[in-house]
Length: 69
Image 1 (tube, rainbow, N blue to C red):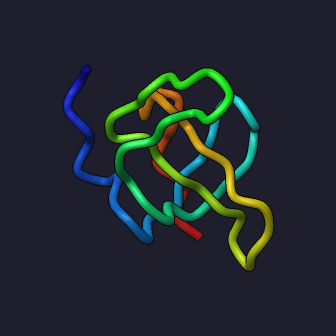
Image 2: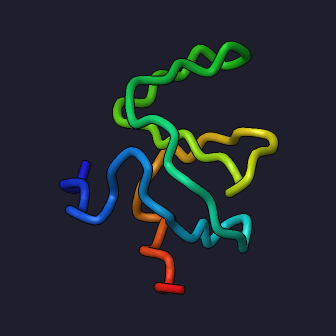
């Protein structure tokens, strides 16, 4: 697995390319999918800014640093 970039940390604003939307990093850590039992180290847990449903990105390479506001 590639090294995590310095801009990717809990609380960072990121752009999820796969979902075509911005989010806030809630947590970075191990994740095991309950349906497949597949284990992912350093999965990135995201939530839309302002709240909403959380989603998980297994590979941080699918994320980009969000544009400054």
